[in-house]
Image (tube, rainbow, N blue to C red; front, top):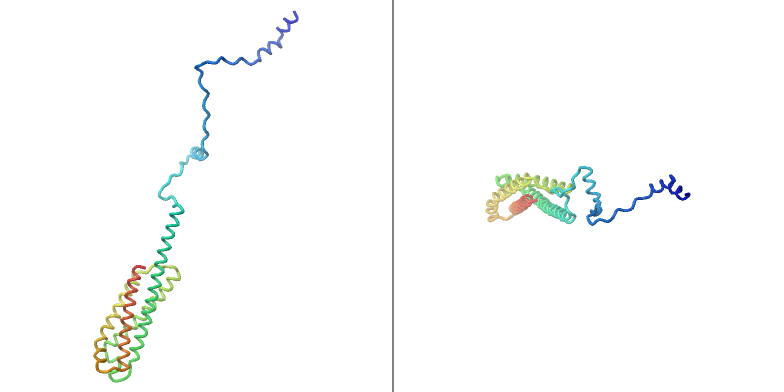
Amino acid sequence: MAMQLHAASPDSEYYVAKSPPPPPPFSPHQSPAPAAVKPKSPQVSQSQGGGQRAPVATATTPLTPSRDRARQAHNVGGGDQAQVLNGIVLVLRAGAALLSFVAMALVASCRHGDWMDFLRYQEYRYLLGVSVVAFVYSAAQALKNFGRMRRGDAHATFLDFAGDQAVAYLLVTASAAALPITIRMRSAVVNVFTDAIAASIVLGFLAFAALALSAMLSRHA
């Protein structure tokens, strides 16, 4: 009797009610457990959460280091070539200025009186005037070119090309105009007057060649 009362006590009912239920029987048609979801990469989750699209390679994408170095080398090579051409043009213009100055001094010194005076001949006056113009122009262009090279500007203008051509044309016409009369004088007499005029004519032709070559190079600088 005591045992029956103990089995029917409220504590025993509570203990039976709280006991875990037995596991369900195994069924062959039971659905498999859901597969584990692979976590997404931080970059994809960030792009989906922030509403921003993943970066796409476009035409404005920076170059790779190898291509960037190749482009820099090409630019540097082009700049060095222009600097070399400007250096040659500077030497040619400085040489033309020096040659024109010497030719001007030689013609201006021919004041020996009577027929040995350059003022008596129109060709020699023209040669002197062109020599002065060529000296002033060539010296100014040489100084301008030197300042441009110091600033790192390696580009010549169209006015430089046209100016070299114009002054070179004046030099060749002045020397060609003074050449026939000088040849006739030297066939009769050779003295300090004819020697100075002949030397100035030769220097005029050399200055013409220097400015003509300078015009050709400044066109490509």
